[in-house]
Length: 295
Image: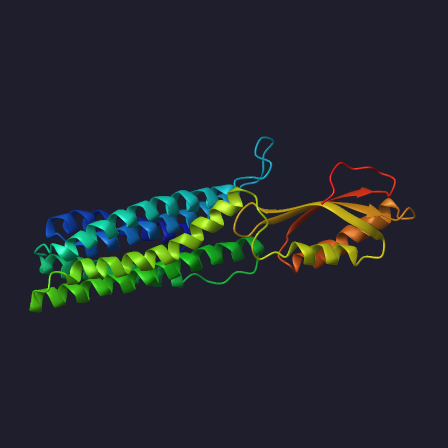
């Protein structure tokens, strides 16, 4: 089955769950179901991002979009994470209020809806888990996106199972404060998972040096070449979670020819790819050239 079709099926199934959980959660007075719906919605967005990534990875750059559409993945992740943080804070506040003023929860609805969500999440995870391994770079990126969505769905299945257990406790023991307690616990987990994504996507949009890149080490690798006297005006940024670019000015010895510079660039490209940088642009200069940039 095609990757896009698998993701499309998972998106539709999980979106149905989100709508049902919100409607039934409001009817059954269950904050746990609503929290699970929010987490399911997070996974819907993750699946959409995976789908978008697969689609746009195959699109070539144009005259007006010279980088292509690689940033779409990051923008979607940032908007999704920001929305989720706001929603989770509101849910935590409402859940704390319910702890002090418990509301009778329709536990049967919670159990049934939680069980349905668990089955659908588990099936969706299984569906994406069937994705085969490819050998091309683009296909490898597809695998990584699908793998991330697969893990999200697994965690969602675990949360849905927790909702079911909470509903069973309420049904047999009538402890209604279990529902908002479960909601708070799950909300804290979602906050823990969402905050790093928000931070990373924000830093990518701000074109900061990726956290996994050591700029001093990069300078050392460049200066290790005996034909390079100095390096400055270094810029390292990411267009997506997997596309890291570098541009720099390199001061060359006078005897370096254009042909030799091509070989230098080729060698540096291989060395920097080992550090996670997959696209480099180097501007050659001589010692006598005065540049306004110094870093």
